[in-house]
Image: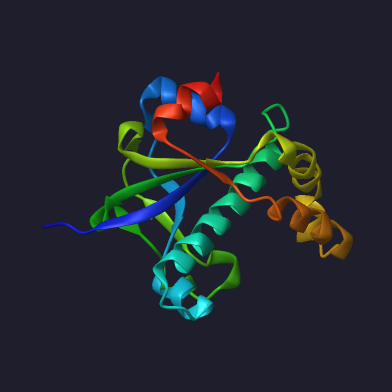
Length: 172
């Protein structure tokens, strides 16, 4: 029996709409986040829910970076949670403890959207903070502490959970 692994695939609302139309998230390889050995060691917790939340948070940060380079899409972070066979997930153990790579994995195949477990997305009231954070990401990379405060403001918003059956309403 193959073991499944929960992975969190960052995207945007436009990306979710494209995936819905195509019936899959892809093409492969897909960057995603999961509970990796490095994330476990960094987070120092055995609570799988806390570890999965940390992986989800990393995916939300990656979604924000996607928004930073696509100013034309709605200002909402979107993460799709999917259970995939462990054999389809690759991670680089040499970068496992690199803070910039915590929880990073790569999926070797496209993922059918019908196999998604859930969608996590910002609520309407997060849009202004997410817009400001997306605009500030580059400055954060340059070491600007004020910009980091702006990005942290977006992270104060919890992503809401949606059933996959709600995707047509989310993208409509």
